[in-house]
Image (cartoon, rainbow, N blue to C red):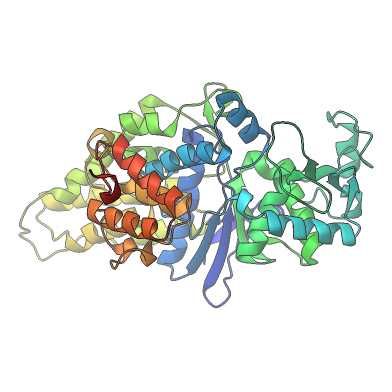
Length: 480
């Protein structure tokens, strides 16, 4: 069975799913700007983990959150003078398109923080009742000293954190390391009613609420980038375990390394990033996947155009081998079992994708050698396809320019309806949405039914999106 490095215990831990089912929560985007390549690194890592677990016969319930309310979202929306909802819609739609190009499986759900306000308030109320939190004039803070295990994930001691803290002293706080659960309303900020007055949630409590609501008090795998270990995930543990009384909040904490651009980490906040959509316009998505997976997921990775170009050649080599047409002249077959075993053994040992990829290319070499010797390569070729599927390679031979979803491709519209507007598409079309193409006919049918239900916000989105794609819909009521 697969073992993963647990960031909290600093040890390899064997995954032990209950009833062959497993829950996985991955911290997702704060969509105040378009997704960058570093976000794709994280997405591909956890996509491969999920694909491998499912290949082993494990049912994975995968949740990835959308942080659609925080300081950066508010600042960006105010700067651009647009609604938070519109900012979220624009950047998440682009992100979902890129994930589809990269062949990343959809999470079971993408909850948004703004949809979980009731759950967040209930959680904060419980923390206050248990004396883990306190209200000061409409601002609610978490008392870190009340949680004895604070610092366990990051390996830091609270006393050292206080001494080394760069946080400006706040007279409202009991301890300078106490963090906000609820923030009192400020001018030009969205707000919600609460027992402590109008305000909005803090960042950390949002994930605690979403993880607990959708996956329960104990999660099998909690994932995200290494930059989230402290303070985000440390605070998440403190909140969640204090709230539920359950230990541990997550059985295994999995953190991917960070992608670098030049000497610094790729980051939207510093402006040191390349958007994912721009990279996918230049390169075969499989080559970008290979770039990510050729490094161990916990190691830092530096973005390199030259390396990705080399990966395009490597993908082409796989494709050319798989597409070779010939008739074998010998009854001998290519032995592939050992290569496949090496592949699985590598993934079992903390998802070692570089070693797993090496097994694929070693078998590719044997296949090409076998072709020259007239051997039967059928089983070996099927093995290559199987291993590549686990790693998420599409192997369709298309570069990004040929594979790019153009303006008339309807996938984005369907995905936005499903994830942003929360339209249950199966209720509006007789065709199984998850097993059919995204057709204009189905979309028009959905819009018609939405209009009949007076869901004009959703139906107007479809109309406007199609108009932007060069398709004009004219309603009967508007005809003269």
